[in-house]
Image 1 (cartoon, rainbow, N blue to C red):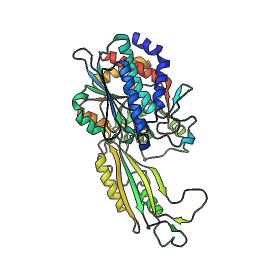
Image 2 (cartoon, rainbow, N blue to C red):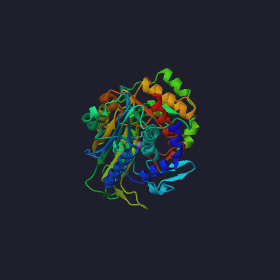
Image 3 (cartoon, rainbow, N blue to C red):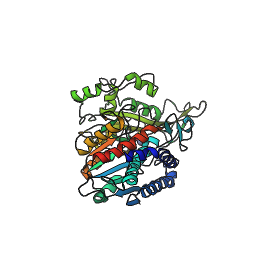
Image 4 (cartoon, helix red, strand yellow):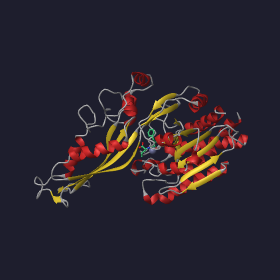
Length: 453
Ligand code: BES
Ligand code: ZN
């Protein structure tokens, strides 16, 4: 097949282009990288024009720009697909744990090592490769395609909801396609039908007006670090359940059928333990790891700060302590409601002698969809063609805050086809994407366009 041959002939060049993009440190969390994120957007827009998209715009927002690229030359009545992804990446720290610099991609043992390789530049770029192959070989695509690639996904997509509202007409489509997730196992194609939501909070505890000598004052002044530790330690019970009143009110419980389907997947608890390198796994009582990650809400501490943490010892009673706390949510929890019950509860736990402030930093709704419809069926066939076996339906524990809004605002079904792999180190040092999956992913998407014909 010509399209597939085109992709194979151009593998080297495709990878080199991706590496060029990966060299741009488009870190959305850090304002000093604003120019880099803008450069990453322009780079992508340039590639979209080069492969023959008809209209390509880099649209300014209150934050980082959104790249919109359209090809609308399909025959009358053909469906329109919206391809969503993000060109921003997570901060690479801690740098000394990388085996090669995060923004100098290295291909080794069939993996592309770089920040953003799998999350999400590699997965976005393979879609553009599929389009390129069709346009180069056939001069056309069987479907209309609109790319929407944003630069703020990793900071909670604060400006994309508004962008959607303002561009509803331009973004109107029959289905949304996203590659920003993982396959359940190597060689096992996967369609993701559920994502968790997120409520991300910052807790600040203030004690005395300034740091104090812990000998001169310790024992007579409440220690904010200990106060914070006590608050945090009360947020779970002995069974690993979250103690915030109202937290579980709207949680949709797993059905027996869903639990059976999870149990039927090829998964070993010990394999996960080895993957993460912890001495043992742990979580809410009564559930396996896959259930805990896919379908149970959680509360995690993402960061803690207080007092003296440098070399040696310093006898000090710190003036303040801070924690970053995030909760992953499942249908039908609502992140606004969870923010409220969290704030109320944490404040109620504040001991006398300190003040506690809680701020919601960002959030997103959980998402779950029934795998049905024309795009789903086509995606199943295309993945089976590219990988030689039928895809499995999975959920994932991560979040893509805008997914639920796509469904609501555009009224279109969303299909998530991930080409990441377990252990890919997304958000961690030594992130990688499988080179085979980059190429096979492009094949699968190219096949999907044909299946939709
Ligand atoms: N690609 C991830 C989403 C993801 C993570 C899917 C794990 C499947 C498994 C996405 O880029 C991401 O990291 N999202 C953030 C969103 C947050 C910053 C609002 C996340 O989940 O932490
Ligand atoms: Zn991410």
